[in-house]
Length: 226
Image 1 (cartoon, rainbow, N blue to C red):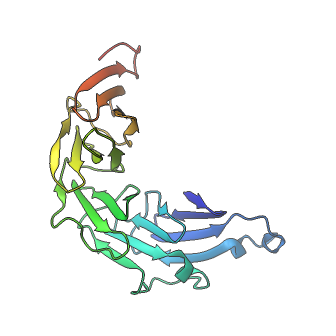
Image 2 (cartoon, rainbow, N blue to C red):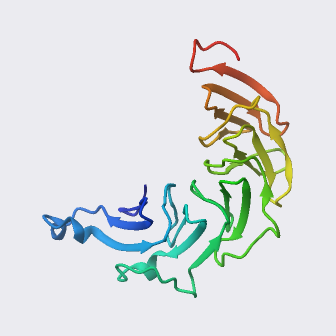
């Protein structure tokens, strides 16, 4: 769920994206359905958090699609699955899209379950990269923006193991080695240090630029080093 300007945006397993008012208005007392500003039928389960700006909602589905919806166009259009071609779009990712897309400098980055990372123009939905970047399989986490001395890049965690570093040009630079441990949660970046938690209970810490492992703790056990 994402809350922006007293409106909650969330998806359902039935494939509907809701915009629901959270404001304290007398008109809503005894009539909770009146809080629904609009509903969009995406024809595919929505399991990730939508990315919401002042004007747009971006989200992926298990129907292999990524959508951009215009908030202003949706208001007053209570239930419609028809896209406004002038300012809304749909992109076929050829695979389930679990996590929230990442929006950075007008580009929308997201990964599909089979391990493909895409970059689209957020306004038009057109590809910024000619081909997606190929990373590890079983991607259910959001691409994470990392800072390096030579500029930002993406860190994409794989459920199969390892985190792939992808340049904003679409080139794969290398991997943060997790010793085969899978990852399903989003990496966290503080400065030039990346933190991640593996499925096996390890808390790992890497230097973003060099890809080097700085520390590893068995968080699931006694807190000793890996």
